[in-house]
Image (cartoon, rainbow over all chains, first blue to last red; front, side):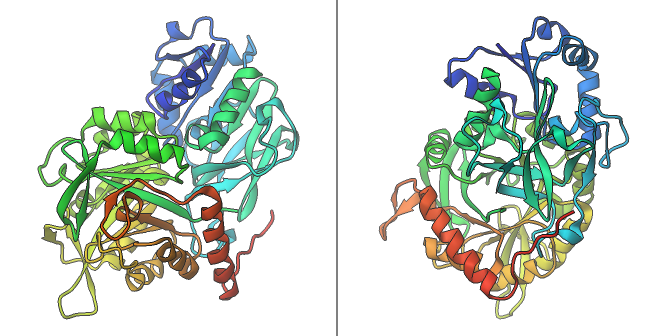
Amino acid sequence: MITVIDYGLGNVLAIANVYKIANIPVRVAKCKSELEGAEKIILPGVGAFDYAMRRLQESGMKEFVDDLVNVDHIPVLGICVGMQMMAKSSEEGALPGLGWIDSVVKKFDKDKLIEKTGLPHMGWNDYRVVRSMGLLNNLESHAKSYFLHSYYMKCNYNDDILALTEYGIEFASVVNHGNVFGVQFHPEKSHEYGSRLLLNFAEL
Amino acid sequence: MLRPRIIPCLLIRNKGLVKTILFKDDRYIGDPINTVKIFNEKHVDELIAIDIDASVKNCEPDYAMIANLARECRMPLCYGGGIKTVEQALKIIGLGVEKVAISSAAIQNPSLIEKLAKEIGTQSVVVVLDVKKKFLARSYETYLLNGKKASGYDPADLAEEMEKRGAGEIVVNSIDHDGAMRGYDLELASLIRDRISLPLTILGGAGSLRDIENLIMKFGIIGAAAGSLFIYKGPTRGVLINYPKPEEKDAIVSRSLGRFADSGFGISSVSV
């Protein structure tokens, strides 16, 4: 059973749809009680860092999710801002992050970017797998995904990086530390490449 | 490598998919959800859906319809039409839409863009400029309310201002080229490209994949959006939802980017 956290941000229904089509049990949690007994959780996200952190806090689920991840060690997958929320802090906001991955979220340096494409990093890009993992099964060559962001996660430990993507610099587009997983792109909006990744997460 | 985006643009009126010519003469095409399902199978890069009545009739965005579109889309969705407030935009993002497009309201109330950037993040704020060439002049003017009202503003000036205020993407829609299927207005695209360093998407005029190739060849990484091209087939404009196959798309991109690189711009990267 996959539990998708619905704190008012991100494409909860599109994620749930991928699992429904594959006959994998999925539920959506809007409050603490609906998180009880969760076995695997997905933290989606679209939007600004502080707004996302505030919404998660206001949903009443933040502390409970933190326990599920840090005490019960259940697998969690963060998507886009949901991944960035797993860092300690972000240059985009003032609120602290969840701190599940030893990292900070930084803004891309415009000066290092390809001329005129600017920020945000928007569109389909590839990723290069640097550490094999079940999450990336069958995605190890020629996988593409849709990116939409101006900030990226800078990991303090390279071991936490599963895949890198190039946009002026190479940044961590897939990360993993223990039971914590994050993807900077939108698997729910990346056709079969993204569905494959979400199904891989279910099989972990 | 980041790729150029090839984007079908769906116009919605009374919950139905329509297509216009020069922003007029709209023709009913079909059901938008069915169209999205077909575009899913064709692996489109992303979709733009615009409710062309919402701002004109001054009504609220149709949240139920937007939620249905967002749930079906296996690709990113940009929704526009009738968004005037931060609350409306937040609600739409909450329905699972990646980007909201603001047009009339961005011109009438530019500070909305700053507020949106702060709440939903720059990456999700798209400004759509509906542009018409001035009569007997070489310059252009931006229009409001689905092309019904001239704003008096030069589109390149507006694009620059919107970037400063926090827009994450500019979509330039040529009213003169809408539905004409005779190619993009490359001159207009150049005027805007020179003034901003944001993702830019050009809409209006694409009649063949060659037109898209020409746009990418000239500008490199850019959004090439089209309505008629992906909805009609053949000179009689029979309705047939279509989109280049992945290998066709790769060929277009590598041919045009190859020639783009030859033009001296080059694609460079700097490692950290």
